[in-house]
Length: 90
Image (cartoon, rainbow, N blue to C red; front, top):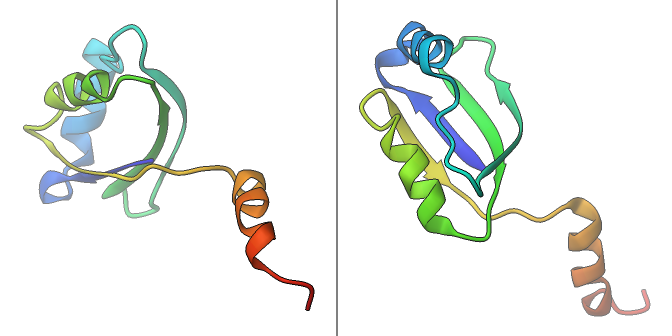
């Protein structure tokens, strides 16, 4: 999960670059989906790759107008499988 905070709350700069140049993802980095806060200041993007360097390359294209936080996530189903042995019988 990539959490993007638009510098100075400037969604216009981000959307202008996206309009003009596209997502700028290198081959091997897959965009899944995204959600933007109603105030247009932050975007939550789900991306997928086996190579974190590809994610770094992609973020470099945007780092002048976006601050990034990256979190590895798993599906709720996978979390349930992982936690089930720890729940006990109660």
